[in-house]
Length: 243
Ligand code: ADP
Ligand code: MG
Image 1 (cartoon, protein in one colour):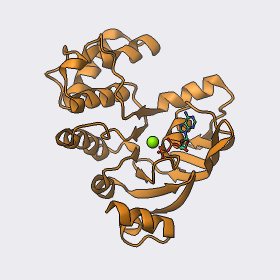
Image 2: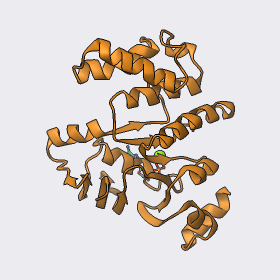
Image 3: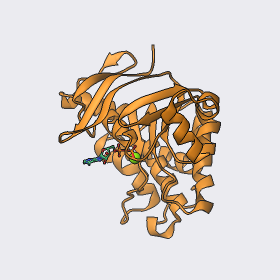
Image 4: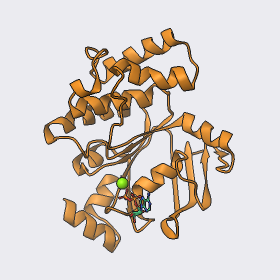
């Protein structure tokens, strides 16, 4: 049974159809590299998965259990299991690094502060920020801030991590430190859906690459298949432009 089963999922913004009957089954520990031209619906797919946008049709199931997006409690339950990190880090500027990571588990999950703090320190050590616990976001580089954002997502103990262009707004020399953090999570077996323009990275890390265009999945395959022997014309055009 796949950990995440997406079946004929569709979504619209007003009258604009942006996700058109997308189906994808993700096994536990898989890393899906989601690629495609700007506007193809990658971010929309991730937004639907975390309950930020209601689908107009289709289903998702986690560990075989379908999610009813009409029920707020079920959408909240999904948010407990999937976490998303965006291009913009959106850290709380008036809170320290440690407070940024502990706030949601303490305030929303009502977990014991001491325990959450210990876990948060451990997570921040893991992303290489053990020395920055009491720093404020504006004292950090973009790469450091994005690693705080990743630690903050992990503090909610997600089973599946969604990463939407998390290196896209970083200066080039800061990209690799964030990619190293993602590599670490991959090595630990975290299931991830990664939207990224870092094609070398997508190719290296993905167990499967999914190419989207115009709201649909056009082609799915191993990195070798999609990047070296794409079957569809649109995939070939995209790959020839980016490699
Ligand atoms: P991608 O992440 O692949 O670049 P998106 O999922 O962001 O694509 O966008 C898919 C389509 O939805 C695009 O046509 C985009 O213009 C449109 N879109 C995205 N966000 C909104 C929004 N908040 N309101 C209206 N249209 C949107
Ligand atoms: Mg996007």
